[in-house]
Image 1 (tube, rainbow, N blue to C red):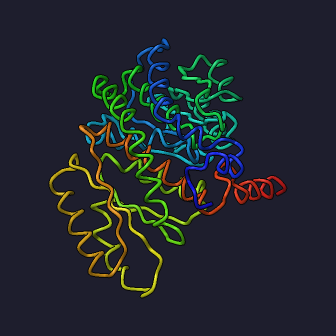
Image 2 (image 1 turned 90 degrees about the horizontal axis):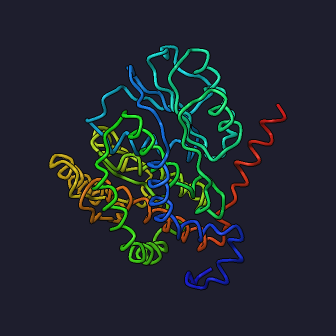
Length: 347
């Protein structure tokens, strides 16, 4: 489709209302933060390390939390997107079990192992067997209703998955979140939402038949994977991401060939990066341009790291949605993922 303002045409391509869930993302964040702070959970003590288990969109909360807390994280923090926990997990490990649907087999496998190892646990889910596991084992949990995600698709429920986990970890005393700064950030992004939506709509045509390569740093590292996955699942578009400063030690030598590529780099700039990484971002752009690569700049306007994260998440959600619509693709369905799961079940 060409007219991205034609809501009737959008409904035909998007019958599950991905558009509606994207429109509600900021409200999701607001409501999830409110709900998780209303539940009664005990402090968790005696923790020496953290392992977060989740697949796809369900791991986003861990990625974002780790990036936002950054060097202030008190514990070694590992993410597991597989069937098995590390052997070091014991009764001093906090195992975070996250599954939007509550049915993810890899996470349920890790849940059983965590129980066998007598690990401390918390759970974030919408329901299903994982919610039952939490109730049966008296595990602190945020079990949300997902009402503000009408499409019912996990990657469109990031308000619940990300803000919910941040709130749960804060409530249990594992991390420190500046509540006032976060709440102000949600208010500010609510005011900016229409502006971000329009910018995403205008920008989406630049990425037709392109391979978006996302470059971020520091507190926006978690956003990079969310953005990449949304290009993959929502836009049906190949994408990749790289983080500064690591990319400066390898990627720049890989820009010369092939000489005619469809790469389009998305540079996410922020005044909240450290001075060294701001300089590295600028020099990275210089190298990209000298290698004749296409560059799209996105400069955040956040007063703090929380607002930056929310802004990039909202912009990326709209951009990838609009790109799917430009491709005349139903943004809700993932036929190849479904095919893979079906074939895997046969074996």
